Image 1 (tube, rainbow, N blue to C red):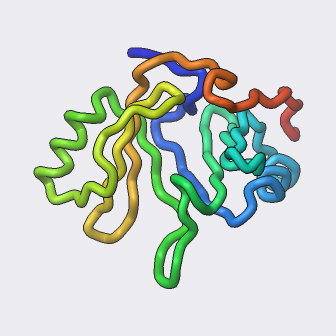
Image 2 (cartoon, rainbow, N blue to C red):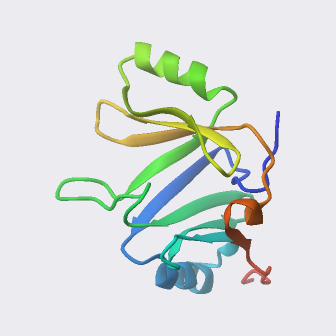
Length: 151
């Protein structure tokens, strides 16, 4: 199995969408003791998303727009990111079981092959396969300096 420095190490990674990521990043690190792993800015220079660690687990917070979309009325503001061994096979299986495929498998510049599906309850799931070990700087992310966790 390939490991990838640009992807969270956890198998299941919640993704939370906010209008403005930066103040929430600071809050989650400061108030709740998360450790920033990396951050990536968009072409407009604004923080697009960040990966945060808590122990051995990860979350991603993303800015509204692009691949991240904040909820409209009666929608949820997060989806679940799950690491799988084979995104194409997983997608085929999910399709045969009734999942609505919102985005078919495709390669991402940060070394992942992903697809996004919707379950019958309307929740979104992104399934991601490590396909290459990509240094964060190679796709525009910046590794954050490590801070001591709150004890």
